[in-house]
Amino acid sequence: MKILVCVKQVPDTSGKVAVNPDGTLDRASMQTIINPDDLNAMEAALQLKDETGCKVVAVTMGPPPAEGMLRELQAMGADEAVLVSAREFGGSDTYATSQIIAAALHRIGVEDDDIVICGRQAIDGDTAQVGPQIAEKLNLPQVTYVAEMHKDGNTITCKRMLEDGYMTIKVKTPCLLTCIKELNEPRYMSVSRIVDSYSMPLTVLDYEALKDEPLIDPTTIGLKGSPTNILVSFTPPQKGAGVMLEGAGEETCAKLANTLVDKHII
Ligand SMILES: Cc1cc2nc3c(=O)[nH]c(=O)nc-3n(C[C@H](O)[C@H](O)[C@H](O)COP(=O)(O)OP(=O)(O)OC[C@H]3O[C@@H](n4cnc5c(N)ncnc54)[C@H](O)[C@@H]3O)c2cc1C
Image (cartoon, rainbow, N blue to C red; front, side):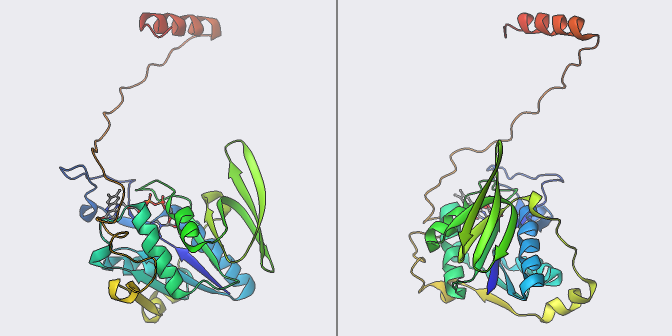
């Protein structure tokens, strides 16, 4: 049994977000971090490893410097790492990204008792599409928004978060789960593993390595194979400061009503 964890390196949007003149993110000038939900995905995999002794493989699609992130994940506890990286993959939208990651997972091999875990959402693209798309392309059952999970044999019982409550779903392996931060508290890297991580197995899957995979086709990967086109991109104007209404209940309600009438809202 192995757990394949899909992890994305993202710009640290808690700092200054730099935007190019054409409206795209200036990724080169920004610090990168591990996508937060993906740390929960890795922690879930490592907890299963602690329980069962299974193998954990971290998989990312990104430029060559993403190797540093993979080494951090190995220092957390991942046994192997796979970097999916090629010029041909650049400019991919979510459809093409999931096509390539699904091909890489197929190449690594998703066996009967394996689990693929993704984060729910990346903090830059923010679409939450990649996990479900990978599941569709690999024909795997999927459970999204997983807030709790328990494995018993080849059945995983998941508590799935909804807008107004939770849903409990049982799914059999092989399957794909996307997880949310409520699932767990990610562990820190182990000091002893930080040095060791640089001698752990790391495989690079480039275009040459994946080109014979059925999902890899020049018309479905990269910028040309991406059905999404960004027509316009802009930074929304800053909102003005709000107005605080002071006073006791009725007095404040009257002030609020008058303000809304003055602004022709009611
Ligand atoms: C026309 C177009 C061109 C683009 N060109 C580029 C480009 O050149 N370079 C670029 O970086 N982005 C580019 N993007 C953005 C890129 O498509 C998205 O970042 C990517 O598809 C992931 O989508 P998301 O961020 O919404 O992830 P989500 O769907 O929100 O991510 C959900 C989960 O999927 C997994 N996941 C997502 N992406 C990866 C990954 N790369 N590796 C491993 N796991 C992953 C993670 O587990 C993550 O938590 C482009 C987008 C468009 C529309």
